[in-house]
Image 1 (cartoon, rainbow, N blue to C red):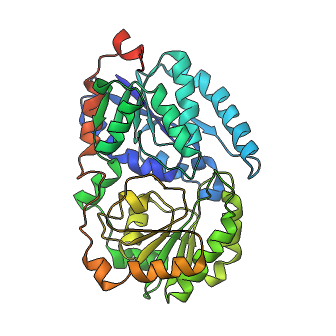
Image 2 (image 1 turned 60 degrees about the horizontal axis):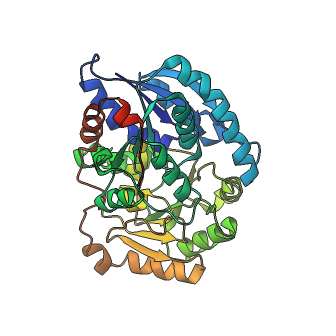
Length: 378
């Protein structure tokens, strides 16, 4: 069987890496992998991360640009319409047995819609979760409705999928693949990465703030509040630019215009370097899902700002706060206190590793037949 994996960002490719490695460990006549590359990988503003994908050695069946012309919600819709158009002949000609999707981004939904119309079996990783401050929440559920097999990262997500009407035999609790490499210990040495990335020797906060794509929050105003709160807390700010969601360009412009105030600004970092960057930080401030999934394992305090991740399962490392500067500063103080840090368990609620094995086993457990492909949702 052939599994086509859709990757649109360096973040999701990092999560796919252990799955790709596990597929390569299986006999080629049992399961093989190929990549459909799109999204931010092909946009130079995000570091041209296509180079990392190509270097993996996995077959790439197509590279489909998905670069919005502007920063509005309409621009996002127009861009995704083009991706659907361009993906259709790719899936038709490649004839994969499985299409593997991850998470909640628009390009993942676009691929799912194409697979739905072309009768390709779909497996979805990280379904059933919530992120009420972004359109991603609805997109994730739409992908789950299309998917024939679900690889949920934690039990409550699996329960929610069943409440949404998905048959229990389609749902597997696999854990989050993003924990596989961390638990295996495959993180570069902190000092070496700090030198390579030029973040200096002082204590620092990693700032990663994505736009909230529902509601009326001003993303730049919130970002400025975060930066001021970090500086007033006596920490250097190491910023990572946000994703390509509507409103993301204004955040990127604000960060690049303030680069002289920051210790470092990264368009994108390989996953291994990003994890090392987190492991050396005093705190992660923003609204990245990495603060909820990987950071607990690193015993990294997280100040989760705003509503983007509202509703998602959290560990004991997270302090939630609104976008007010004073509130953020107080949350940073609380999260970085010795008493808070000493109480961190080092356990992520998203699993204990070995997710890739479970994901691949889930694919192989399901014959691609009419029972799988014809869904009856309660």
